[in-house]
Length: 349
Image 1 (tube, rainbow, N blue to C red):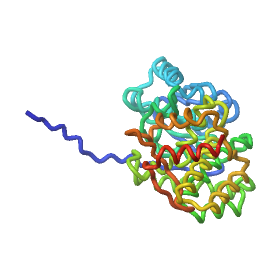
Image 2 (image 1 turned 30 degrees about the vertical axis):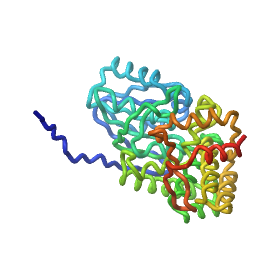
Image 3 (image 1 turned 135 degrees about the horizontal axis):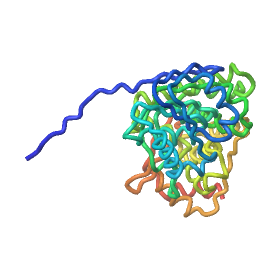
Image 4 (image 1 turned 120 degrees about the vertical axis):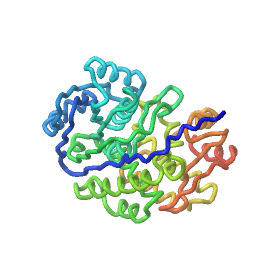
């Protein structure tokens, strides 16, 4: 005997992304929990509260740093929600960088099987990347973002004035993700990044943010759950996640690891004939322009290689790479042999 459970349905999870040099008004019914860290709260919480209208607001703080992107932090947020009697009509706001946004989204996805959440990113990297697309999760000792869910926010509010308090290193880390998008999707945008400086004017900054988000929104709209096209956004991350893991998520910022991961991926692309030496040098020059690291020293090739298999994108004993096919295009590869990969890794010892 067979019984079908018919769950075919159409769900519209579309949402708006507000981009500007000041924060828009946010109106929410019910209880609101603002998840943030002490640093962001001290700098910007007053501004957020001045723009927020809600029935009841609670501030929930988590420690600052990638090492706190963990189930322990998620549990501390859940405890606060239970204590303050949040329900399914309540809303969480992720107010901070990528770590806060990912933790908040994941917690929202599991609290009472899902409540609304809103992203208010305060770093450049989170504004152009992690706040858009609904990827949520935490790290484990086995790797980055191995525990998580796809769960879309109800809205994203991007305010460039928050970036004025960021250290230059954090700005550069965000620019790494902008460069990533240009390399694999838009050669004209890459040329613009070479001819202009994102850091020199608010006009340039807003343009770069908008271009990056438009590209990512297009990808996510085509492939929300990363069945195909969206996996291209992992360009530079297969190498970068190993770099972050080896540094215990404290040595490098995410964007810095992605920068070095881009260089390593590009070196592999040159090795198999997908990228010219000229294009390789062009990307390295652009990364250096923004003060990003381009050289990672591998301590042990075997250990580094083995960690590829802990990545979500690897399966069936095969490592899946996203590599540029020239500038503005990309290819997926899961057929590159161990010998070729290690030959490239040897260039980074």
